[in-house]
Structure formats: C-alpha cells, structure tokens
Image 1 (cartoon, rainbow, N blue to C red):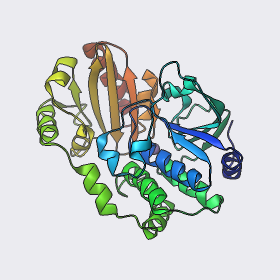
Image 2: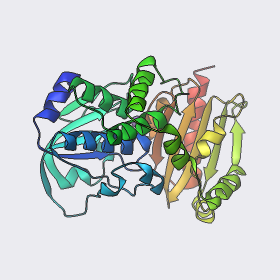
Image 3: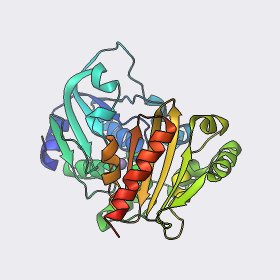
Image 4: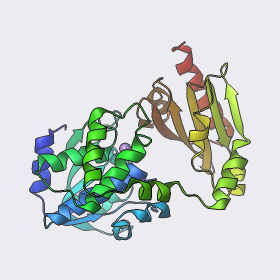
Length: 316
Ligand SMILES: [Mn+2]
C-alpha cells in the first residue's frame, strides 16, 4: 500500500531494530542508499543493519560502512521492528524476505514496483532511491554526517550517470549539492568506482567483438553464451559501450550466466524499454530496464530480439 513521505518518516522514527536490504546484483544506488540510511539511523541511536543477499563488489569498499554489510544465511531467523527494502520490489531481495521477521517498508523509485509491500513509498521522479533517502532525512530534520552524505551521493551519482541522464532534475542536483557541502569528495568516489583491473578491460575488448546491430541500425546488442562468458575474465560495463552507437534507439546486453538462465540489461534514448522487460518478468525505468530469461541462449536471444523488434515497430 502506498504511503506518503511523512508516513515513511514516521514509520522509521517509531522502529528501533531495523534491517535494511536491497536488490540482488546490487548497484551503487542499492548499496549507497542502504549504507546512507544505516548511518543516519545509527546516528539516531537505532539498531540498524544492512543485509544484502549477494556479494558486494569490492569497488564499493570506498564507501564508509562497506565492511558492515552482512548477508542473510539460509535457515537464519532475525526478528526486527522493521525491514526496509530499498530500490526494489520485494521479489528481488532474495533470502532477506524469509530470514527477517518484521513489518516491511519498501522505498523505491522504479515505476514498475509491484506495490506488494505492507507500506510502499514510491517516487518515480527521483533519479535514485538515495535521492529519496535524502528527502526522508530532510523530512525528519536530520543531519547528514560525512559518512551518510558520501553513501547517498554515490547512490545518486551512479543512478543518473554522474548527472548526465534524463532523470537528472534540479532537485537531484540540489540534493547532490547539499551532500557535497557535507564533505563528499566526488573525485575519490568516481576514481574508486571507475578503476578496473587490467583483465577486465581486456575482457571488455574481447566481448565487444560480439556486438551486433539490427532493425536498420536502431537496435544493437552484445549476446554472450555460457562458454563465451566463461572464457571472458569480466564483461561488466558493456552496455555503456553499446548505447553510444550512433542511430541506436535500444541497446542490450544478454549474458548466459548459468545454463538456460540469461540476464539482460537494456538502455534506450527514449523508447520505453520496460515494455520489453515485462515480457520476461523484469522491469525498471523507461530508459533503463532489465530482466532474466530462463531459456537456453539461442531461444532467449531470439525471444529478446523479437520483443525489441515489436517495440521498435510500434515506435517508428
Ligand atoms: Mn536506483
């Protein structure tokens, strides 16, 4: 059920033991908003802990509190006043849903959120969930320590492509400006997040050999089957190389992660790619969406290409 910003603040205020979680395959916003909220709640004297059901990429160790992020374990049972699920619908928080016994507060900026949580605060106009956390702290008349500010800034900056994407609003930049005034050093964060091991840069170059363009140049993608994935050291960050191709409306990367499980990321310059993602049970934003297709590589690729073609047909 959807609730207001004020009710969200009240819900946080009235809880003492709070578990914070976010989506599997966590990104800068999932991690930054979780840690930012944790630091703020701890500052209020609350027992707040972050549990995410996945490995946290080491690049995020630049964020204060990184080493405090825990993982929910099979068979574990944690009783708390509140489970706060950030940047996600409840179906993508993994084992945190089973392990934590608490009422649930869901905070998100994805327009495809399924509204299944007891309480949901959704603001699709925010560039990042971290921008919503910033607003909640303002609503609660709280202070931003440097640790809180650094985590929230990271969430905002990474979700809006460092203030380049269309989701960047005046409010986004004002929030970021306030956080900078609290001592954030953006260069420290961006250098830490951008650096890649040599093998990963080589992996990107290898993966780029698989790029394909179709639909009169309006669609482009990299499709990597399981054996190619295993041969590559790393293939993160490919989508940013695909989406810059001139004339491309929809960019896609499909990776067969396990036998018959393909993960898909999509970007567009305006076409609603959630229309493609929802065909496969995924979601996201108009210009950035994703899904998992549980089919063998060739079938998954064909189904995805067909779904993209259908969306391109209806948008000449
Ligand atoms: Mn986000």
